[in-house]
Image 1 (cartoon, rainbow, N blue to C red):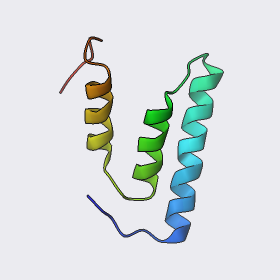
Image 2: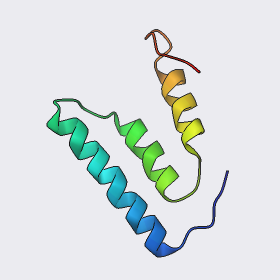
Image 3: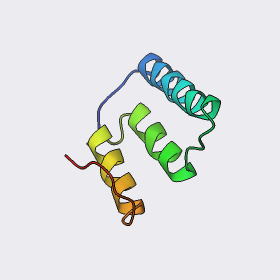
Length: 68
């Protein structure tokens, strides 16, 4: 999925991604680089969040995740 976003929307989304990552770090967690890259792609409108979730599930096949 590709969504046409303005530069202002992209920058807002990138700040939201940065805050989400920082929150995880404050909680003592580390967000994998591949997930960060996916989130930045969402922020730019290149993919949707459903694809991020699929990517996470594919990278963690042996980890029990709640799948919907």
